[in-house]
Length: 299
Image 1 (spheres, rainbow, N blue to C red):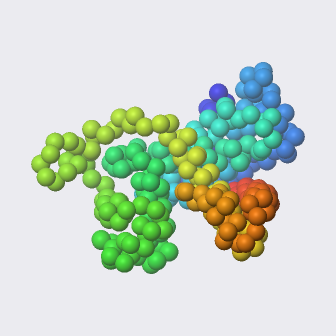
Image 2 (cartoon, rainbow, N blue to C red):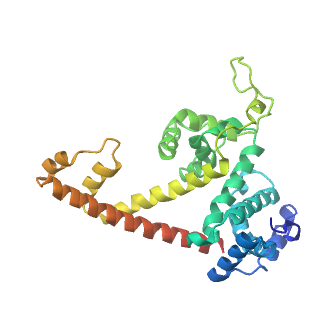
Image 3 (cartoon, rainbow, N blue to C red):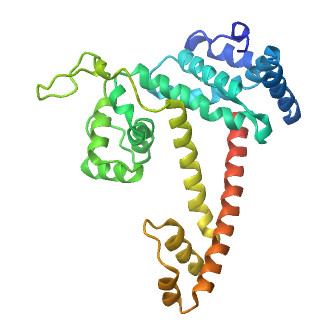
């Protein structure tokens, strides 16, 4: 795709400062310039345009990669994998959709790095479900927030709190915490009861595309948080009706809500529609602010 041979190379931890200085030499792109380069790449296979798109976002990769230094893997490899994700993003970027490359590339970069971490640790089995992947990448942060920094098993109350916050079982939290405490051999048995099977047996992952899973998971978390914040724009009656009609697993009928509030079915429907429009507008505003803040933090 892009001329990867001409990209700056990060040679180990000692070369980090030099690498960061080198990638800062590549200028950031104005929106219109980025759009035209992306069009040239997509429509004319212009490799120089693709190269400029990649190099102008190398500092975004480095910024994201630094957030994964706690996993004990070579930073040069983490950055390299992030760059692979960036190039995949450039390859698939559709400028006509109206958003910036950095917003789109962020998910591909994270997905590529996270997949590399999963491959590099002998914990591949635990990475086959969305909840376990979420736990893998968030357990350290969750432990830090409750000051559970000591090695070994956590207290029962700490396990319960983290399981609730991350939406996983307490057993999952205990198992993941123990696995993260040490990198076991790929030939180690998966179970202790004598049943056959080693960790290496799980190296073939037949689950859906991992990059897509990670991107969807990140986007879901952002939008869920945005929705939670947006609910603040509703008054108590609007919130009650909105939650009962739009968020409940078994939505209430208009008749039941009309009886609860002493109004007509049509009035409940009107309130529901108005509440939805208010929340929708608030969510869009929040997501836009989050994306802008992420871009500013990256640079």
